[in-house]
Image (cartoon, rainbow, N blue to C red; front, side, top):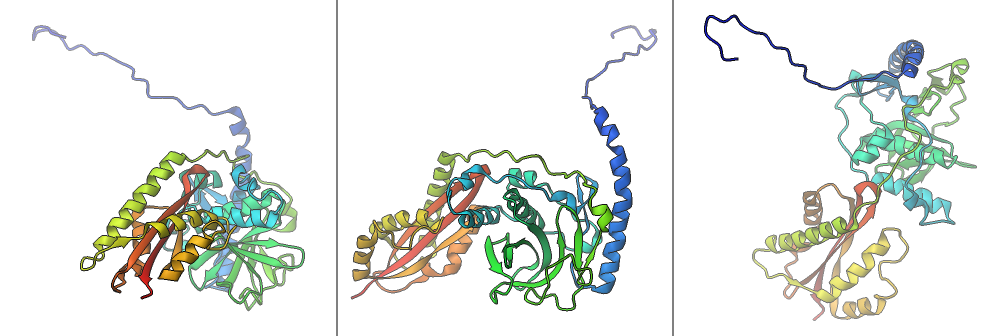
Amino acid sequence: DHCLKSCSAHSYIRKNWLGSIVFPFSALLQQSEFLDQTEVLQRAQIFKKNCKAMFPNRRIITTVNDEGIQFLVTRYIKALNPPQQLLDIFLHNSNATFDLIARFVSLIPFMPNTPDENDGSDIWMTSERCISLAIGNKEEHAILLCNFFLYFGKQALVLLGTSVLEGHVAFVVTQETNEYLLWNPSTGQCYKQFDPFCPLKSVDCLFDDKNVWFNTQQNNTPMAVFFDYSKESFWKQLLPKNVQGTKVQSIQPEEIMYFETDKSMVEDLRNRIERTLKSKVMEWRPKHPTHWNRQCTFILRQILPKLEFGIGSFVSSEGDNEFERILQFYWVTGFPIQMPYTDVQSIIDAVYQTGIHSAEFPQTEFALAVYIHPYPNNILSVWVYLASLVPHQ
């Protein structure tokens, strides 16, 4: 306050409210669970060390971090509901529904994994956060797909291994009546165990909500692996059978809540991508004029939506006659590109790499169509078709 120099100093105290935190009494009661888990976590570290001593090049993850807390990987596995929208499309075809669910998971954008999994810095999100943020690493995608399959009562496990195409991978194994199926969450594709085209190179580790199994078979290629993990001579298990029965609470939610993607936003994005690509094609052809064939563009726009669910051949029944008419006059070159939506630049790069824009034939015309199929939570499937049309004469 304003006073003469002779005044003594005054002190004032003001309390500023910052917030509060409440500890439910139930949380205190659950502390015993964490104390019990300490011993299991220590066991998991020793188990991983022993497995690495046996096969140094094989992958094994037993514990991960989530928000600074260490958890067994088994606590990430729990039956969770997929979006209802996916279940309503193929009401009487369960196999088609499973394929669609795998495709949905593959459309969630990927983030790069940590450089070295042996440094103990693996951080995994729950399936709910993976969906809400619309991003995840390879393991989170596999866990999400596994949890979706468990919702239908399937016998499913997460598989850690390596792939010819992707390096370190996480697949999902489902046990069917007479065979094992290997699902790649990165692509949504499913392979039988003895499929020679399966890119999986090694089967190193399995885990579900009860246990972790390390593959001790000398030959760990998918075709040679004996997947019956109850055989202790083939699979080394983390938890003994007397411990497996003690159910540990999952860190996953009871259910996942979804929201519908704004269709007007999707249409705005489609228009923006189409305009940008047309501008880029003309930019990539500085020495040649670029003419657009509206009739072919119209036909491609009719066809692309049908390709999303594989419910039609490339030439639709309605556009059949029109497309045949175009083929009478033009040599048409091109193909549809499908990719998850991450950003516009990724789409531009994918179209540029086709090289279709570089056609130098005289009187070449082009057709360009873009279709975006919206799934819940702003997860988008993008289709782009760029075609070049050269007159036959």
